Image (cartoon, rainbow, N blue to C red; front, side, top):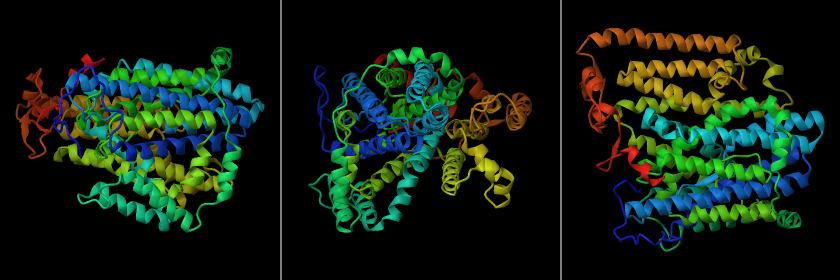
Length: 568
């Protein structure tokens, strides 16, 4: 595993870019491309089967623009990596991974496209409103780019990494793990090869790239056990064809007024995507790749705008897994090739062809690896006193996964939670009321409760009270704990009161603490649970001592987050 102090000993020519390809780029490419491709196929299935949009809208407009947006973000990430390599004089930089924001796929589909098309049977209207929705989200992300560094400084690293760990395990790795146990004749061998070659220290078949081994073995087993069919290849070839992206910018303005009732749902998702970006940038920092926040988020926003202009409503984001790709030995080639491959797949509609050859069961274990490495990062970086925060931040993600699972089960039975009733579901032992509240808005709920927990542990009562008040405000407007934005109501008001009482509790503690010079806050040192006087925190300024200001250290190098601003 790379660290902040592990740098390539070879000198860097300030005028030469990083090498376009390294040995580890192959495995990293297959892992990232598979994830992107799976999301693209999910989009195609949702829009054609669930929503019922005409195929010419899906393959002629959305899919090419979808690939174009990912490609533009990938190019930007390679530029950022080269810029940082020249500034730091290093050749071991790993570019950020790019891809579509997965939660947005479902939100735009079920909150915008499906209800509009079902009501009007007008695909142009549904697509126009969706494009406006995506445009507004990218505007929010653009504005957020100028606040990103402030948020990274305000939110402790443990919280950011813990939130990302929840996303990695539950959103990225959990379903592939279930799929692996559904097709054990393929996935078990591939998963074991990952244990040996990527987690272990004595790899098998050392001279061959592990990613290639995994795909070859998994594909061979899939075909050998009859999981794949030549008919699927023929069908995929029949559906392939060149469909270049076309400009649809006029539709954004044409449907802007009609789209206003749907824009409210863009706000919480934009905030969630903003947090995802921040968390993944922070994760790269812990691996010694200090990407500046603002340019990265601006690049995501710009790539999203380009996708909007050419017909895709789905935003682009920094993908989870940078630490895993760095562990594979990747550089910049994997993300550049992923962007190019997604562009080609979009232009020629080749996604189904690839998955008709390579079984998902061969790919699923690679996604498990990325999720596990992402979660392991927070364990490795977290001071011992803050370890409980990891698990607190996990609960919203667990609930989010369980909520989706319950919803899918009820949908398969031809019903939903509204028809069955929350009381009936609670009586059956599902605790659905709590599942619904905790699971909705999981990215922000995880962040809020991680902050409340960590500031309580550190005895930073004012920061904890502010975190609780922010949670109350988000809950009152339905940004968290509700399935859609609202203003007040029985449940949101109850949450507002509850968060308010939490804030009041911290304020009640702050008053006597302020008067008592013997009150302590905990250090961030992992090796010991040293306590220091609260007065020391109040008087400390302009210090990087983790005992005082909570900045983390790794590999003996202080993480000064402000230093990267010169890389803009």
